[in-house]
Image 1: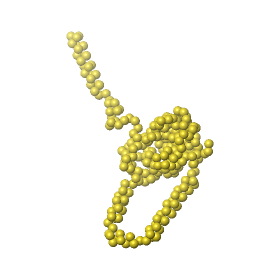
Image 2 (image 1 turned 45 degrees about the vertical axis):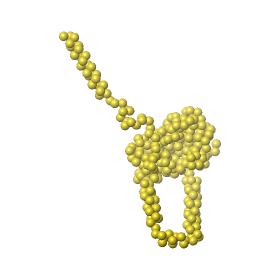
Image 3 (image 1 turned 90 degrees about the vertical axis):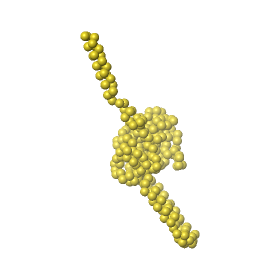
Image 4 (image 1 turned 45 degrees about the horizontal axis):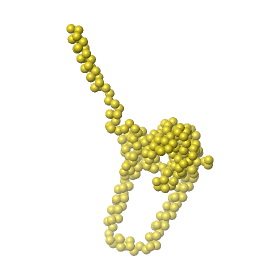
Amino acid sequence: MLKTYLLILTTVCMLLAGCSSRHTPAPVTSLSSGKSSETQKIHIKNNQYQVQKGDTLFAIAFSANKDVRTIAQINGIKPPYVIYPGQTIYVENPQNKNKKRKKYTIKADKSSKKKQKNNKITKKELDQPKQREYVQKHSSKNDNESKVIFSNKVRWRWPAVGKVTKHFSSKENGYKGLQITNVEGAPVKAAADGIVVYAGSALRGYGNLIILKHNDDYLSAYAHNSKLEVTEQQKVKVGQKIAEMGSTDATKTALRFEIRFRGQAVNPVKYLPSK
């Protein structure tokens, strides 16, 4: 009788153990729809991007080399520029393509009579619009340059101690900042007062990155850090330690420092004090 009881008890225990093992919560990795637990990189394709968790509009605009206000206007997003996972962000106005097609169609539908009339236009008359266009472009360029000078109300300082091993290049595929080399863990400091608008590793080629907003026109970026010591929306003061130098997404230990004016990279040396 005792043996039969023990046998029944053992069988029940085995059945309970089997049931409990089947109801154990699944690993987190099996709930991620096949995605890696690592941060998804921002990859803009066909002038659009689908927002992932942890993205900010500033990071997307930075990746697209655009002013965040331009991206916000295209997508109808108002300050403080809140975006959501799964949302599609356009970095170019989709209507521009349709406008180009429409213009091309109109041009193609012109009658031969209109073409003959256009052919009678003198060289002098053709040159006049070009001259006006040149003057407008030249004037616009000077206006932009003067704005850079007179709107620079940011008090800048060097973000790290070290040797500058790469300089800014204005070439299309050139280096768009300064590479400041030092040892692992060397302090990286805010180059000016500002607010953290991005802190993460979703931008290709930048590793652990911090982006600071200084005013409506200026941003600064600090890349390849080993450790980030600030969080998004945190206010920082010039000279405050925000990270530690590292080599994430890079081949050597160094800080990549950039200054952006209305979305475009500018030469930091023109803004930083002389050493």
